[in-house]
Amino acid sequence: MSHSPLLSLAVKAMDDKKAENIVALNMKGVSLIADYFVICHGNSDKQVQAIAHEIKKVMQEQDIDIKRLEGYDQARWVLIDIGDVVVHVFHKDERLYYNLEKLWGDAPIIELEGVLG
Image (cartoon, helix red, strand yellow):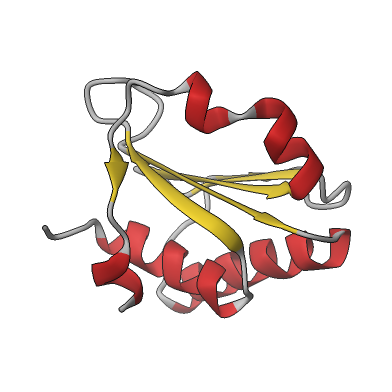
């Protein structure tokens, strides 16, 4: 299955900063917000910021416009809107609390072996 180039770039950037439990949801037909949600977490404020910073850097290097980046300073839940892909970088505790995977349980999970492999 081929993936969105934005999805692949985001997932690889997350993986480069050792993001934990990366999950991609196919939001097509489930939400009008985006085609894909990508969710991960870091185990510290610094790691959450490092993951978000890497995603921003990779997108800028590819001349991809980041439409919105919120939550970076607090480093508890950073939301990065890159158009068809919305990235959620959580601190571990917040990820458990908000549980977006369950909230958007109707969305199919995308296999990422091809992206990371």
